Image (tube, rainbow over all chains, first blue to last red; front, side):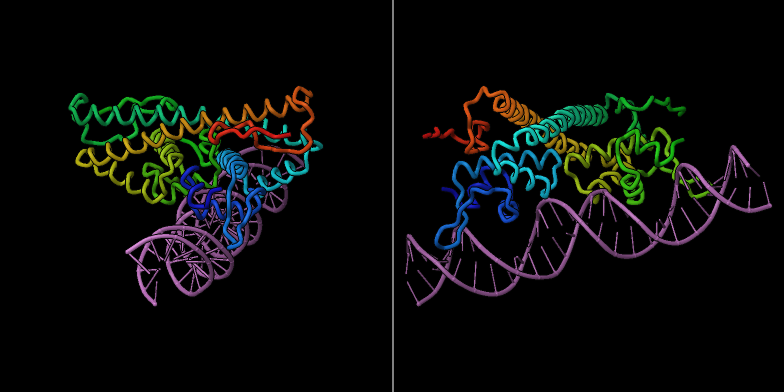
Length: 144
Length: 144
DNA sequence: CCCTTGCCTTCGTGTTGCTCGAAGGTGATA
DNA sequence: TATCACCTTCGAGCAACACGAAGGCAAGGG
């Protein structure tokens, strides 16, 4: 059995957030002891992990709550739940692509700065800051 | 030259968000025409792409503003900017890992549901919903 | 010439999801 | 007994949009 503090560390959430989620009913298996303290067992932690991932997919707390309720209703809602997860899966894959782009962008940017620092790039005092970095817009030659 | 609507489509941001960012000074190169309409050239779009990525790394609008201002100050701030980007790069890499985990989780979940739907998994009416899915917590054998 | 369409503008309020701090209870240790 | 180190609830505050109202400008059609 684990306390709020423990699971917050384990899942890298703030204690506030963990309480917030449990209070909203997103972790149905969480119990209280005689002193009214939230106690998380392994199942609760599993729920919380799922909630965290769904949240990261961009689902609202309200929608996650609906999904959790569907889970609690049992087998009869299995198709509905499948559709939801398939949707979130698609979103997760899109996010994965974006994350790759983002990481690539930051790396190129860092390398660009490093080149300037090391004097590899000729003195570029007038800062066309964002030039020659992104692949999305056609490059424009500087006249100077 | 592009309007708010055009760049919002191009970068997959809402028009509200594009206006919000420009009004906050995150896109310094954006101009207005005689009718006070925001006009984005290629440079503005490049800025906006950078802003978008920094935002996705979790930087606050305020911090991005500070960074943009550093950019505008020119070469003298290059080391400071380099540090910032290195930090965001590290964050981006962490996000990439998380995105992979998330995508994997959703895929396993979807497959699990599919197994249930197809009757591959023996009738599991009592829903230990989150079991045998996540790799983070030690598995507990069901007694039933 | 006017009117509709469709874009743009500003402004001000609403929403979500935390985030923080206050105020206080419990229980083990010095 | 007192001081930790936890836990609790509650309520206010905040960032980053999201949205809608109200209105301006320009082009095209009747």
